[in-house]
Amino acid sequence: MSTASFQKSLLAELPHLRRFARALAGDAAAADDLVQDCVERALKKQHLYDEARPLRAWLYAILRNIHVSHWRRNSQFGVMTDIDDMQGNEPSAAPEQEQNLAVTAITEALDRLSPQQREVLVLVSLEELSYREVAEMIGVPIGTVMSRLSRARSALQAILEERGTRVLRVVK
Image 1 (cartoon, one colour):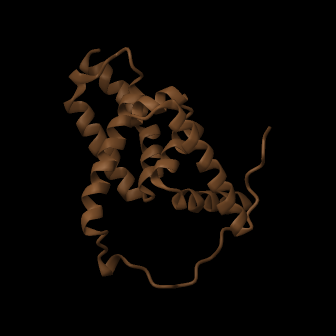
Image 2 (cartoon, one colour):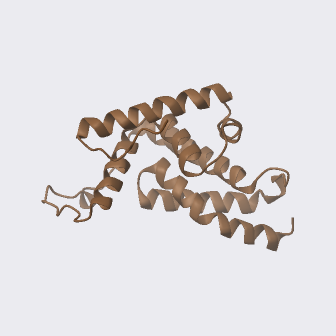
């Protein structure tokens, strides 16, 4: 794949990378930083990309590895927050549309899932990757992906029910 073709394909994947990064990081600014690091690394390591593999899966693996590395590095020292960035307990206005409430409820519930469960749930449900692709990406057996996905869906439903929110329906 030529450099120009690779860059064009990479550009088309940016919205998907940002969505996955947002799910992993839980913060828009941190997600943007993750995507930037991922794109930078992908451009530097373009020669390692195997064209037989989907570009999105390769990019997701890079993004995930960067996130895990940052998480491990920061977990040793804890998360540092500047006092100027902290917000007071000012009352906020609730969204007026039910859809915004549902999205907020699901986002908050996703943030309460373990990182492993959230990762698998987002990759399978939102990004529509196959179990095999997810298993290869995160380096676990397919059965582990299926187990994490099942536990993530159950936990998500329990968290939403705990809040009294009924935004998901059971499909059989």
